[in-house]
Length: 369
Ligand SMILES: [Zn+2]
Image 1: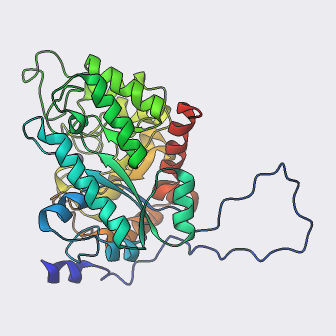
Image 2: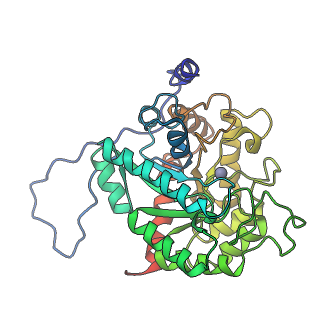
């Protein structure tokens, strides 16, 4: 496995890099200082290259390793090699009895915080301006998300669970997914059918309260894994943009886990983003770099260039597409999109600019705190 990963990583020296190297800061000009009313520019740093979904925390806990482990698909070396400098580290509570879900989230969160403490190269970031500072220091910013709101659920009333959401935000949580592959007390899942859940697969009353509270707090709502009904209801109810962090499109390959066009359009119209998922089962038959690029092309066609992002699902036990074995391979995807005529601006947007815009809009919609 190790040899395979090493063999796969960075073996395509012929692939052109469409990502311009960050320009060095301009030398100080010998002119008068601008008026104080003009905001200073953000610190110079590389453009954000965001991966909206990796399950690396689960792998680190299960295998008792750190983010430097070379067998990870989105380990530190792979991210540096492929250009990822903003990564959403996902806290994933799998199917289990209710009271253990918050404990699982706690264990995974502690693992992320341990990486922050151990490695100067990685840092948990809570706001876009924190990300800009981390990037200006040429480090990797880690954002924290929970994959499924059941991660809040200890079986008690909803009020304390929403208070737990606020407490996790103070600690560094920036995003929350509504569900994983099973319906929970908040929302219906794409892994269920109406017969599994006679009450329906939309949002529950608790789910509506969760959407409202996430809006109030400025936490990004993630509809990946939610049923189509819950996706549409969350998208329409939310006052802020929502995202699908790691979802492909039904328009390329029909799958319960993929988004119908109406969901792509709703997310785009609200100012959200959709992270193209690399899992071969969702990408479609013969998954490879070109098939993943087909997904990005389709999202751009239906939702516009402002909706496209990347959510690899690395370290989530996915079947990786040919040529995209780990985070070190990402330049191959950008090269393929450049070959198809994506402009430099469109590439920068898909690489990270779109998500940074969405995240700032979610915080702005929450208002001053
Ligand atoms: Zn997932």
